[in-house]
Length: 388
Ligand code: HEC
Ligand code: HEC
Ligand code: HEC
Ligand code: HEC
Ligand code: HEC
Image (cartoon, rainbow, N blue to C red; front, side, top):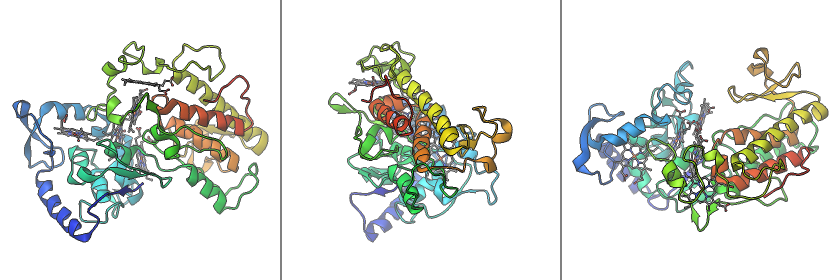
């Protein structure tokens, strides 16, 4: 959620930062990095139209193809119909240029918090990632309160992709209502959305992004041999595309589908197939978790539930119990409202998984543990399955 700076916490730095900020805004699209001048070409910076700076055309081209530059995306247009038309303080940090600049304190406001709502219509442009604040930013605070230190340039990615909740968020909600019986529904208990969690999964229990069941142990960061991979080892920082050319150095890889990669020889889903990619072991457990959630809602709560990733808040009452969210069920006043503590925990985890489509590569062990425990805790059948 927050950022911790290792130095420069005092006021004089703030003033200095503001002055540098003012200068840097004038140079907003020229990152303070060596740029090979031979390939440099004048380029109009997306956020400071009056400026022309020498930046290799290829960087802009790569960025332009990315989701970060997609001005039409729901992630950037979601607030366009709101009145007033602005991105609220809660959402602005990760969904706009001014929001992140505000969070970093470059605009002269408090560091580590968003002070003002942001105007709509911006995307994740060059200056969002190339600004003076990132030069000495080496740590990030997660929603769990855990701080990760000594991060490199991927600190940017983690700030926005860290998710918005954790084990403690879920437990706090249950504790605040003093709900002691895990199987009794409460109309006051609300669903908790982890939001996009791709930068939480790689660190596993160090940041507790998923719901972790008390008494069990969980994988920490997913090291590969001696190394921990940063986001930038696999994703190009500008196009965001996967660096497929590198995977084959260590994996049997056809060059097209990372879902086919597998290192482990345990049959986690118990289907007898240990040649399928690890992504398929995970999907199988994910499907079992979903059917277990539905069965629990019918058998224990008596109010059927179903999930629709396309519509917030995702879980709705399946009024006709056909296992699907029909058009007339897909309404905010039909949002699921009979959460038991046990159901909330498992449903949080199912939604966590759907919000990290790269979980199988980010930390397969952690998510297999999370899935196994969720199914087990909800009373599902884990016969034949294995927990890493
Ligand atoms: C910590 C950063 C962060 C915060 C805060 C945040 N989001 Fe997001 N949000 C993201 C990221 C990252 C994505 C992109 C997910 C992806 O495509 O992998 C996203 C995607 C979305 C999307 C696109 C559709 C979807 O569900 O994926 C919507 C809509 C959205 N967020 C709404 C909100 C709202 C509303 C708020 C405030 C209540 C908010 N977000 C706060 C990081 C954040
Ligand atoms: C999502 C974050 C992000 C955005 C947006 C972004 N960059 Fe980068 N850029 C990075 C990271 C991370 C690096 C590599 C790490 C470093 O050296 O800081 C980098 C490196 C660079 C480099 C140095 C080249 C190299 O390989 O060392 C240049 C030049 C650059 N970016 C230009 C741009 C331009 C121009 C834009 C906008 C069109 C842009 N960047 C947008 C994250 C970003
Ligand atoms: C200021 C917040 C912010 C920063 C910094 C940021 N992202 Fe994003 N990222 C987003 C949002 C918001 C989206 C969704 C955009 C969309 O849907 O078009 C997104 C989308 C993505 C996607 C595509 C997801 C999809 O659904 O296709 C990937 C991959 C990604 N980011 C990786 C990265 C990496 C790697 C970095 C660091 C180099 C990074 N992001 C830095 C906010 C951020
Ligand atoms: C070992 C390589 C690897 C590393 C390291 C890695 N990723 Fe990924 N990432 C993947 C793969 C593989 C996918 C799944 C892509 C797919 O199936 O389309 C993915 C998916 C994603 C997505 C969702 C893209 C989409 O299409 O919705 C986001 C966002 C993302 N990663 C962000 C990050 C961030 C942020 C980090 C660093 C904290 C990171 N990744 C580290 C390999 C990696
Ligand atoms: C330098 C070697 C190396 C490179 C390059 C590499 N990986 Fe890996 N990867 C590993 C190792 C080692 C593991 C196993 C870690 C463990 O289980 O302890 C692993 C595990 C995985 C897993 C989980 C497999 C399982 O059975 O749990 C996936 C998926 C994966 N990598 C995807 C990728 C993708 C996609 C790329 C390219 C973008 C990539 N890797 C590049 C070394 C590498």
